Amino acid sequence: YITFWTILTNSQPSPLGGTATVIKDSTRGPFGPGGFVVGVSRTLLIKKDSANSNDFYFMQSIGPFKRAFGITVGTTARDTLVWVPVARGSQGVGTTGAQWTAFDSTFPGAASTQVRLQIFGKIETQETITDSSAARVQRVAYRSRTWRKITVGGSVVQDDATTSRLWLVKDIGPVQIRIVEDTENIGHFRAMQAKNF
Image (cartoon, rainbow, N blue to C red; front, side):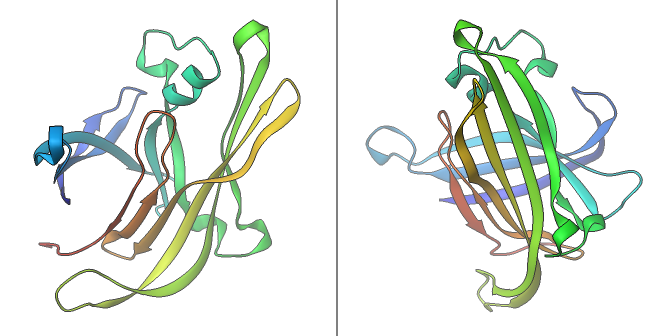
């Protein structure tokens, strides 16, 4: 499949307040019946921290998590959408203090069992990767990782489960990404092939 990311605006009102940068994700692949090639698109929202320009957030839905554990989803965007800090350069790289808590909340689940979702992040290291362009350019990137821990009724049922890895290059953004699948969405791995800026 092939995906194009197009920046539509840097000042879109966000469903959670404030403004965000809107990226249109247009993907074509064999997703139709019998492998028929179809195009799908979705909107991604990101924002930069106003106090720390090296900190970036991605708007994520925790709806699949809530439905998997029998947690009431609700009817507004605030019931399932959260800002998850996916890269926090202000925390440093690979050091002991570099880890951050991206999300931490407890919900009443099925049979009133308390379900806690924690998401953590860290810029693990700086490394050189080769992109997917025709020239096979080597780029020095910062590798960021987010992972989750789920506790149900006081017992940990999932720990250290990677949710994403991003390879970020200054003045470009993500040149390689790995989004791990969940109960409702397929995961994907993407590497930058070309850019027009």
